[in-house]
Image: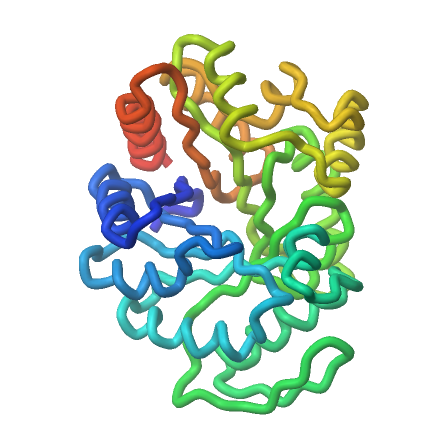
Length: 314
C-alpha cells in the first residue's frame, strides 16, 4: 500500500447499496472506504462485516463513531468481527460528535477532549495489546481479547486542541471541512506538538473534504449548501473564523468558504487539489463525494473515477 492514500466516504440507505458502493470503490482502485455512524443510520462496523466477503483489498474505516453513546468495549466487540473477516484492513475513527446531537439522546455532553482521550486509550489497549485495565474519569474497562489485532485507532479533529490530542495518543487525526491552509498552519503543528510532548512519532493526518468533479462551480456550491447544510455549529464556525473567514459567524456558506474547504472543478483541477493536500502534509485524502447537476448518478460516477485515478497515481 502506498504511503499516501485516497479514500472515499460511502453512503447508502440499505446494506445492498452500501455493499455496491464499497465494491465499486474497490473496482476503481480507491484505497479506502469510510463510513459515518450516527443517529439511526446504518451502523458502519456492521456494514463492513457484511462487505468483507465481497471485497479483497480496500481498507475499511469509521469516520466517525461517536464516543458518548457507545462504550469502547462495545466497539472492541464489533471490531474483532470485522478484523477477522477483513484482516489488516480495518481502521477505527472515533470522536465526541457535537453537543446538540449527543444531548438530543439524553446523554450529558461534557469534557469532550478528556472523553476522547480516554476512549482512544481504552480502545488502543484492548485492540492492540490484547487487554486493558483502565480506570479513568470518563471510562472504566478491565477486559481482554484472545489475540491483539492490527487495528489503528484514530480521532476526529477540528480545533488545535483535538489535533494536539491526536498527535499525543491516537494513530491518526481525521479532519472535516478544514481549509488546506488551516491543516498546514494550525492542525499539523498542533499534532507535532502533541506527539513531541508524548515522546512519539507524529501520526498521519487524514484530510476529509467534499469533492465534486463538475464543470459548473455554481452548481457545485449549491449542491454543497444543500447536501451538507450550513456551518451553524460553534466548533465549525470557530475553526473557519480561525482560518480567515469571519463570515462563518453568520452560519452560512460563503462562496469563498466553499472554495477553501471543497475540491471542485474538472478532473485536472481536482487532481491537483488532492496533490496540494498531500504537499501540505496530509497522508490521506478522504473524499466525501458531492453530486451536482441534474444527473446525480453520472456526477457521482465522474467523481469516483477521478478518485480512482488519483489513487493509482500516488
